[in-house]
Length: 397
Image (cartoon, rainbow, N blue to C red; front, side, top):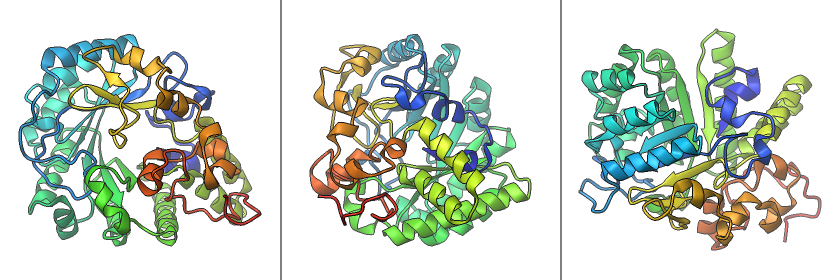
């Protein structure tokens, strides 16, 4: 996750303390000194929408053998003991779980900050008030465009209107809320409209996700943006973030799942002659160290299986029903887990030879595997040129 706001303006938000701290890049089992990783719990596979890019391949049906309330509490107890800073409740649609509020409140009481990733369609005024009351730190609501674009992408007519109501209900009770937008070939033209939208609706935050080829997202490889479109998208994001800052609007703008974004921002600042800003950007991306799936970020699926992140569920390290998450996370007898914690010697192709490897850490492994069949090959979504990343002999072997 790249905080565009932080890199450009050194503005401090909660998550920045987990991403941009001294020695964060050197951690192997957590987000920082004395911490476990940020954990996503896909608490249910059931969902009321049918999103084209769903990495869970969720559907509107009941799935058997999901973690029970008691099992979830035992899992949260271990996260607290492991000093996990944040537990992100995701899905499917997490608000479909009848015990969501009980478990989110339980996490908060245990000192693990609960956050929520939702499609927003179930957030009534009463639900928003309850989310605020129990201390959910942040609500991320997924939109992939405005009205018709979003509904087509989400597979249900009226999804935008209901999500919009959910956003407004959160804003009305003072609940911190933001958008989650997955960039692809069909909605890249919506970027400027999204910035207009968050200003108009008084939304605090927006995360622009790069597409990951996982679940139903595997079928969208040929609908991903080109390198040129990625660069154009980043130019829009940088321009609009600067505009918010110039007008005194405090909005947290982030990009997710493509760490070459930070390098692109650094190179862009250099090309503009803004050496001081370039130095600031380089400092922060060096602190962070790039992709940290399997290190500072992990995922547990609805059935208790532990994965490097929510997009890499085809690789499993163990199950929290059998062993504590904390034990699984620190066990490097698993070859893939060991590799993720020290991946640089394993990387191949352009990634292995990139002069910014210390700032990117090989980017996103699941995309590389989906495209090439090799987990350690180059990430195909790196849109930087060979010249920009310091390759002088043409493309890497």
